[in-house]
Amino acid sequence: MNEITPKEFREFNFANGEMLLINKPYKWTSFDVVGKIRNSFKPIKLKVGHAGTLDPLATGLLIICTGKLTKKIDEFQAQEKEYTGTMTLGASTPSYDMETEVNETFEIRQLSEAQLHENTKQFIGDLDQYPPAHSAVKVDGERLYMKARRGEDVELKTRKVSISVFELTRIELPEVDFRVVCSKGTYIRSLVYDFGRALNNGAYISALRRTKSGNYDVDNAFGVMELVNHIKTLKEQGKLK
Image 1 (spheres, rainbow, N blue to C red):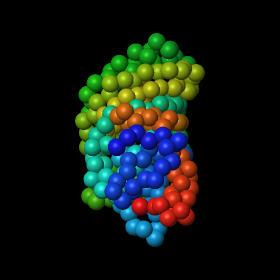
Image 2 (cartoon, rainbow, N blue to C red):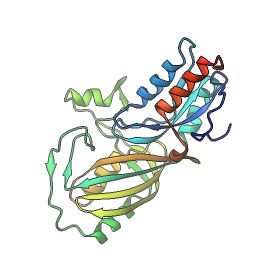
Image 3 (cartoon, rainbow, N blue to C red):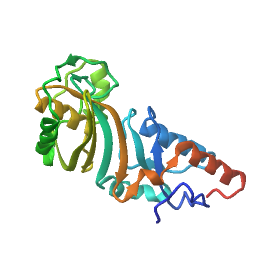
């Protein structure tokens, strides 16, 4: 199995199993991507799954597996991830991103660049992290975001995560760009929220992109429609398998 680049339009064997790198578009859910690719195979029925959910407002690398390779999804999902993004300081939202409206505001004039850089250090290493209330984690068989949208209070449980890199790459308050390298299961929204709280302030995600998963890079990823159109061409040529 080789890493795929957009130029490698070939006669895939999707039923036997392919690992595909996809650049997830903004506001698409990970399930939207899976559904679009699965539907492109019709009338052939194939297993299609993804290795690691991306929030709808996030973009970037989504690993898709087809056919027999779906059995290896957990292996791909376990790989270390890299993200880049932008946080907005001085405010917070219930979803920790722009899905919901700002519910708290804070003064930011007192924050210095040195203070912001120093604040990242306490988030390096192994952490106990709470998932956002607006997340796909299941509680009692239901996604948390469904309960949150109904206004239900849920007792959240922490999960063990590990962060090896957390660096600030641009500071132009209220915006701060960052890069994070972390273990599977890490919520960058929670990291940013906790970063703001540690400053006695607020912070939420205003842009997020997954750039790497293990050794796979978003620069080598297909656009969704780029792949779908290639599958269509294979079908027209009678080469889809």
